[in-house]
Image 1 (cartoon, rainbow, N blue to C red):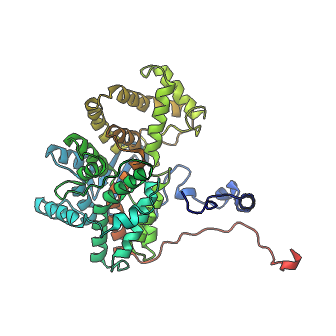
Image 2: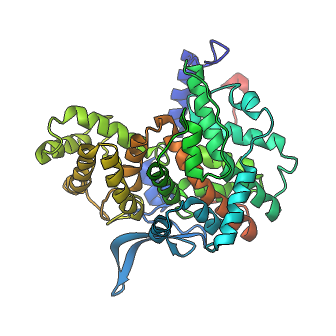
Image 3: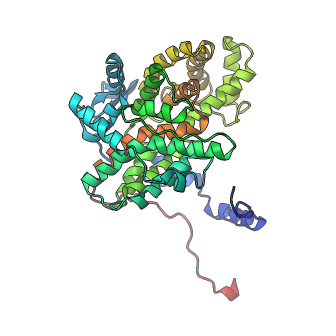
Length: 454
């Protein structure tokens, strides 16, 4: 709660100012067509405008056959390595894969056993906050929005860094590895500070050097620090799948834009967090969970296809849930036939649902995954196929792991900091100009009128 009782008040005068701004700032949608402006840096078919080059990851959603682009099952590659093989490789060897993924993204190649062990030691070394940071920063002003709390903590870390503005490659590498190590602590401690403010008991667990990132998240979060290997492994898979997704997603593009200005690492990552926080980007899996909770209340028989289909139709008709006209977790800006991250996660979700005794819910998810594209394609003009995206299942995973809703997007950030770091370093190495796209002025020119004649 703000200390000033008037801090959050919207006065009638401010409402009037907002109304005037709306009148003077609304651009005719037809102007975007007239001037061939790619709104959202995408063309009418949803294809992104080429704004840069990267060697960090590749997203494949189409194949060229006889000179024509045709949709295909999606593939995602980190530094040329198929992400599905990254996940399966770690599973076969009964180990965790996120740290290997972070190394791959940062260094451009897979580590050998010695290199991975040394990288894990570096993460453990940097997994320590400055003295009294939890008390002076995190507990001082807890927020119900953990993404805001996380961004504030990241910016505050700059105050403890004597080389905060040094953008030499070794120093930025140190800062990035440090932030990869610290994000779980900053987010979990921020959540615990918020729940303590709300009346819950406060417990602050120290991270364990020998544990993986996924294991430490569960250790830090749970009051008894207990978890099963399978729980930690599924969370590790989620971190691996969310670690990177090309240079064009909103938060990674933000990383490139902000880095190109020459600013420090802390400001850059705070900007990326601000982007990821948006519900159109990082908060989608929360909407999926909330949608399914409403569905389970409204649909009497979860196995009745007609009843489930009717609910999905009601979603599109703006008659159900939040009346936004969306089936959350369906469709993606790039993928058409399938999102490889959702395909990987599906098998783990099925096993976890059996372990947690939530088979019926999994069957409902599977039914919606099958019926959703049918309902959407029967209602709307489609430029490409529609399939379940990674958010469709990741929220269900977090729900089964008893992770609080407030941490869903921060967990995304705990993973994506690896990709952001790789892209920041890539931009610094190849940076030549500040990123500055053009905006065309379509307003009118008017004369200045002296005050006494207005």
